[in-house]
Length: 150
Image (cartoon, rainbow, N blue to C red):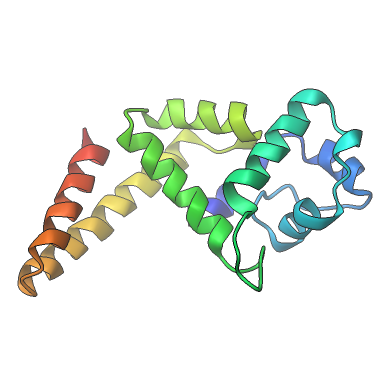
């Protein structure tokens, strides 16, 4: 999954704000736990504080009992990338946006691979929906494919 490749650019600064070592992987369990319960935002510079707060608000807010280990952050991150692509950003622009908004580093090739995999999944959904006469689902899958591929 694409979330497994996301890294915080300033992980060492976040580590100092948390008070102990954490992995630089943004969606690693220890990192998510630290961001959701142990971070002292006053120990971050203004830009990094805003990025961490944006990350928290975009990906870590959910009502699941197991939050942040529920899988919702990773799903929300994948959804964010697809929505950015559907809004017209290319893979390089998506990477730049994630860096600026959340302080997350990804390789453009990883984003491109993820989008390609997403299209293949949507094509399978489209084909199964056609076989099961689920025309609304088929139409939605086709629309998403077109928006990602443009």
